[in-house]
Length: 94
Image (cartoon, rainbow, N blue to C red):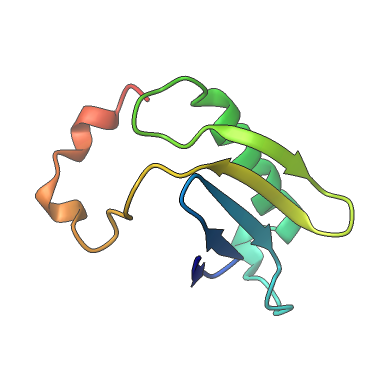
């Protein structure tokens, strides 16, 4: 299992699914992001809007009990390092 950490969440990346937990580091969040709850809500809303769209993760489960988290399908390697090689305007409709 791979692990990645970002500014507002950490991801546990398996073969078939990814679990994303917000506020995993327990650090303060930048005011522009609002709160960890708002980050979780934005991510959940975006994944709901992208339901059924090709090349986007599909939301499998969303939870906000003890942890703000979600589980989604894995769609392959991140484009973070290679985004400049892709025509991102192809995703404008999505």
